[in-house]
Length: 562
Image (cartoon, rainbow, N blue to C red; front, side, top):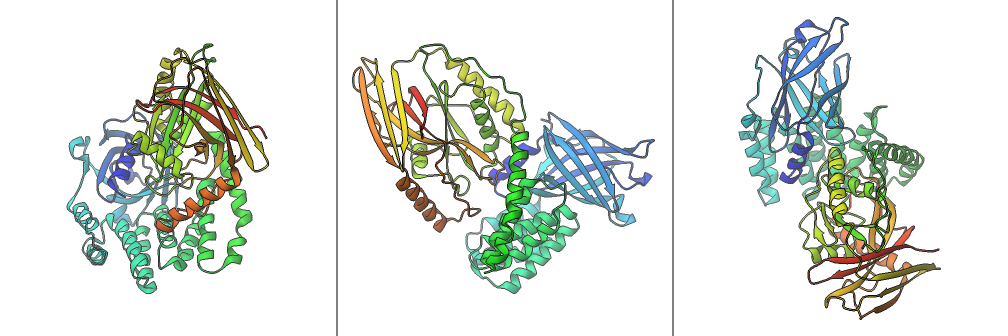
């Protein structure tokens, strides 16, 4: 986990509520310090006072926080069964699961090993330690210890052979530290890419799973999942992946979200193919299809998390507003922006607020990216995702977890409302018809006697909805840009009337997009085998943009008639 991912984790966990219910033993009624361990830092999240109620149920109260900027902390459910303790935690509207493993009588009242998980997502090792403290020093709550510094030094070693030796040395010296869980997976990654020694890889993998056992079932599942994916994407050890992904399958339960189960079974099928067992992969098709339907239904019921109030149509004669969002399917902080973006489609008529979504390979390969989206990002000098532009002007930052989506949505609504009274400088007529394998586009711009010198007419082809279960959890992607028919240089505007006709051979476009994705995959593999390029439910957008100052002066959109 790099510093960017760490920053996201800190953002997601900001204000984390944790309540711990322990074994039915009065000695468990105490105050506990919860510490979460990341690869390059650790955080004392909070102190929790645990009491046993008269009805024999347990209740916990957060009495101090290591991260002071906390909006909401709530414990939804607490379960104790055997040596397992599980809590469902509402953290600013997002559910986290904490699992603690009860150890022997001497240990359990002093220190408990645990894991904290985003549902269906990343899992972190944690420790609960009994304490008499009533406060936390917020200046020291987030820290890098000598162990973290040692691991950072290893990660900065450019030579892979030297790094491999340093990783082994780290495990010998700090094998009992929670960070060793991350280090072991990193070592497997190194071995699988550069040595391919099956025995060495499996020995380290077993050691990694053994370390995870102390932190409970969820941590074991998380480590097995990381090992499986690491091996599946490796250069020399793909054939070993199935064993570890199977361990994940064995640890799935009724509480596991359908979208995570879908990812696991898809990875299992890919691992079987990598191990030259195509029939076993095909046998999973029905299960995967069932999980896809369940996950889609769950997603549509759940997203967005907030209420949307449809706006009134824009005043007659006012110009259209264009929101352009640069995002990525492997980008966790893009979730808030993506959900807010989608909510706008249910707020404004599509002719009033025109939405364009450009995908980029940030932080990793994205199958919805294409050369035109990359070129558009160069035009705007985009440095990262998410980044958005409203009528060509940059918006405030929109990144964040799902729980931040409503705030980002209201930020965009406020910006849009401030622009809705602007008068349209011209009239745009736009038609698009699909005939066989061709898309015919015709655009006219009129009633503009003096257009700016650098104003250009640009045509954009978008797909209304693309279904792709992205690694960051977004399942449906809207107004995905597929091409700029006519190019991004645009057509210069003539006084009073500009006319452009373009034919797009959709079969050729599809082939070009496939070829581009294959070139990308040869350099940096995608996280899965899906290439969603159906080119269905198409729309065409006509933009009039001043290429000098980047301002979008007007726009129009039309659905492709079929």
